[in-house]
Image (cartoon, rainbow, N blue to C red; front, side, top):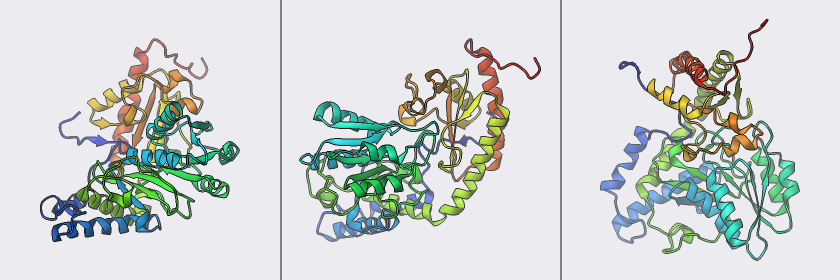
Length: 397
């Protein structure tokens, strides 16, 4: 990388930098307003007031009530609390869960453990070649013993946005609780729980310029849930443990900033994403865009390149100061092909050549131009070194 060129970060689906305004909002709660929010003295009352103001702020984005907001340690914990909590609370009704084949491991591994160790039945509904769940498949999978449906809002690898409002409508008509992992959607897509027919939804602050280590579970009033972490009566008795007030304040501030200019930011980033997608597909043959071409997160550009390894692409990009990902950051380093891409029908050997570039607020058109100036050469070089790559014949050969 040129010493004068700034690094280009295109891995915002993995995490984001904390907005300086969020840091500023958090700072007093580390050193000045440091009381335990459960304490009755003035220090505790001041911390409790900040906690409940944050709860009120977050609830407004769901068009919900503050009592429906549970603060957690991360999106993974929120997913676990929703899935395990509802499943265990409704054991007398049934033990059947429905999810999809492309969920984040925070959902899929939780369902697998409930199946293996707690005797639950799990139905994994398929997706089409563009990564979308068909609501009709969900409807057909529901049985009298179904207690929970969990379908993600938007996929973390290839960005496809699922028809969760329709899936939620089906669940509600059948009297089944509906959860969505909304971690990738937070700060970008609507969280209106009534419009989306949500009973439970998970968020993580670090995906929208908030701090790592704090998440949210929205839980509609009346949705049965058994705590998975016991101890004190924190978070309405649903999540024991002293609340992390500085981080919760930061989460609420980050959400406020994200949704203040959401439409403008989405339009700008979508335009850059489209420029990136079109440029890559035009310049690099034997390349496939993964996920739905339009029904996808505005910042997500994901591809598979024939004849190359995703890790090799990342290393070469990194040498030039460009940060990206090959699938999910949570499975980075795995030798197994992406379960998301294989579920979409892609051959395992092709899945190894995946690249995910996810844009953020600081990215510019110049960043995209630079990526497009170097990525074709990287792919060409790697293909030339690959014994398994068969170059397509030239026109007229």
